[in-house]
Image (tube, rainbow, N blue to C red; front, side, top):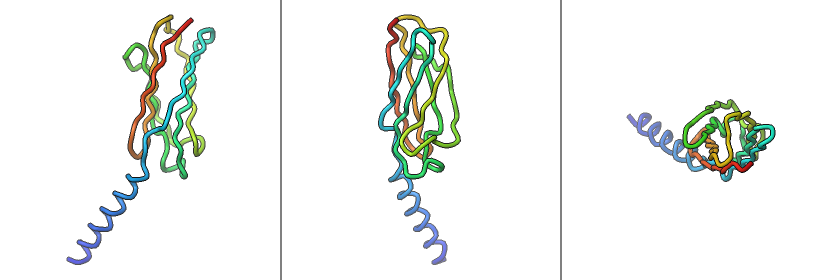
Amino acid sequence: MKKIVLFGVLFTFFTVISTAFAHPPSDIQITFDAKTKMLDAVIMHNTSNPVNHYIKKVDVGLNGEEIIEQSIGRQENSLSQTVHYLISDVKDGDVLYVEGYCSISGVLKKEITVKF
């Protein structure tokens, strides 16, 4: 019985500790090139272990509707994840958004209004 209680306490402790280090992206820098129709986003997410704590998913939306969902297996470096997408249906005044999801916990959404 003591082993079960000890296991429960340790499990709870490590679960709390691991989520304490989890955090959503700190910023998303979005640019859109009207000539090439390319959306570039740099998702800032500082982590000491980009293999286990990383940006796991990126969603892109156009005028409030999701148009791209990309799953990512690991973050490209310890500071950020960069993504590039061709968005051919964009018109002047459209609103693009990018959402970045942490593999442990948290999400951040940023948007821009397209100007030609």
